[in-house]
Length: 267
Length: 276
Image: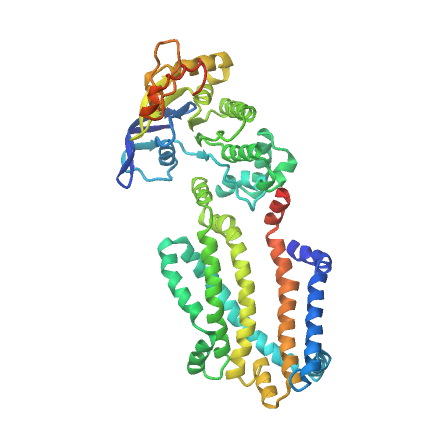
């Protein structure tokens, strides 16, 4: 509850600090407008047309359901990856043997392109929800696993000794010793995974599904409808930015309050 | 009666022996100081007593029920306030939140931490305050045995003196036994009832001193005199790598580092009362 209140109270100051980010986004829009004037509307429609198309899609009720389907698939895959990656990564981090054995496996997972997993998933799951969900899971899992593993491995050995002599029970070791340290490694990994999930799910839908943003992109491509294509892209990127900067960043600031006050003390 | 009893204890890391033939007894309520040069196995011995290392050979019977450890570094959790850090051991024992906050506050106050320091995170505290918090965290458990590994070595002499006083007061009130490691002979003489001097390669006990006056009633003059006497013992000098004293009035002269240096004039004997 106090977390929610702190989050709400932090929003105005946080938004005010975002003017620099908004200015750079507006510069991007200007460049887009310029490029559109040079290459013509078929290659690159101007931002005004694209956002009007997007508004039209939202008003006609076409955008909402597609975005909801895509979001559901991405979130299921991401949630599974966060749960499995965080738990397994921390377990592997506790044991030196397990972390040494896990490293090469994670490198193999990270090195395999998502498109390869997508082809396998299409063979295994067909046109069901399983294909995008599995692809998202397998693309996000290694990122989170490595974050949890590194966080657990880098906990100061002195603190572990201290916890041993003060006879901290397993539950306290998890919540008072490991998690507060690991979270500063896990959280960036979760945010990276969120971005990955959102990108991968659209790709998976484009090739395997009959609904969702990816499928809508496939349709607009086949109609050579560049404004609609860009409108869908704008919707996907806009949602990702909103989730990351309005939800996750303030939450991260709140969770790491001790770190911030340390920095202030040093300054 | 609870006590720590160690007989013929030996320990080795891989094939390198670090402790050999250690015998010592620590009865309830008394203070034992282990003094010796760096690398003589003092910390290994303390870790064995704390149960952080498994005994390889020999006997170690720890009859104390509530041991606590104070390390060389404060080792506070950076994500917990000072108060929550002091209460950590109490939380591990299952003391309810309200009671442990009250006990941690009281213990923090008694080591001289104010309300502001108690509600700050450890990084905002000075080194001396962090050490006080670490001492409070150990004492909050109401231990019957306190193991200390060079706990005050990073502090200036003023803070050191204050924390010595705190420790002695707490000991007088609660009667806890203390096993402390230090390489400061004067600190050992100030606090301990018994001083064991260790030598390295492998770590063994080479000299024992029992101090008759209780630590709280030892004046500065007596501390200086006893330290000086200790430095005239050939075994103590040898353990710290110092040359044996030339006569009974002088302390141990500093031994040259290399054989070639002996061509130079021998260094003047150290003044009495200097802790080398």
